Length: 137
Image (cartoon, rainbow, N blue to C red):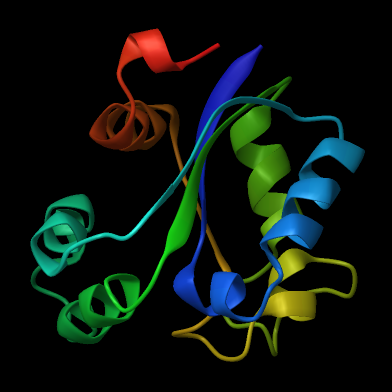
């Protein structure tokens, strides 16, 4: 079993899609081992997305991620990282395949409903950024 990190972003939360996304997570066979609703501060968003600090979209991304509540989740499944990324779909919802979360719930490349870790090392950092070991059941 592998763990990965996911976020239901502020756009999807504000649209009332969090429950639908969580239902899809369960339907696809993931186990949720950690889940929190939170409101990231700008500083927390900057710390979380520090790997993108030099990229031109960093300010816009951290503004967006601190613009409203989101849901942070730790998922567990066989090949969880790849499985979650496949379920999310392409970063740009317009390019995402039918049936993916970003195609269904995302609006544009900046407001694309979900986030997911891209590698085991990234997942380890992202999980520990929001969850202590005692919170993962």
